[in-house]
Image 1 (spheres, helix red, strand yellow):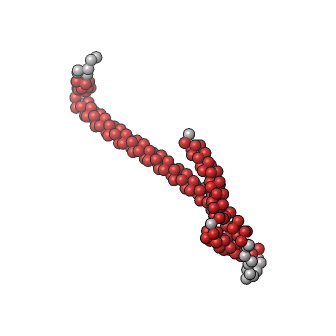
Image 2 (cartoon, rainbow, N blue to C red):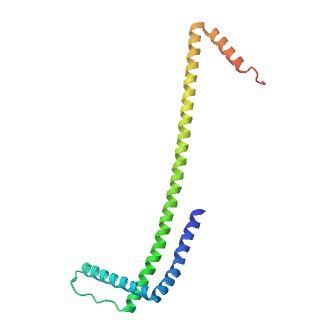
Image 3 (tube, rainbow, N blue to C red):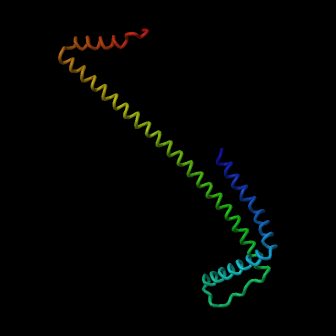
Length: 169
């Protein structure tokens, strides 16, 4: 029940982050100092992307790369900011999900360890009880050898009758 709700919440968070990223784009384009900062980011991103593409396609990389005009640079930068924002929200959601899953697995593992310890303790208790019964059986066998069957029945009858003393039967 919790997992579907968590996944639904994650999806809602991703969906809500897109309008927030759009609002961030609008605000980034309006402030002059921030505008210049994002233009510089866009121009740097453009140069890196163009050089990488030229290397991939085997073209010369020592040519001069023309800068983007101001409007294209602003649009590229705000798109980059929006994508980074959405990616960050999605990454945070994934990290949260992994941590939650890890905690759940840790709890399950701890429960398994406790169950295993309980089973080991029960096994040890049963082994002690078996040893005690073996010891009592050896005593009975010793009595049988020493007294014959009559002595054993007398001993067993006394043990059994002592066990039932005080019982309501």
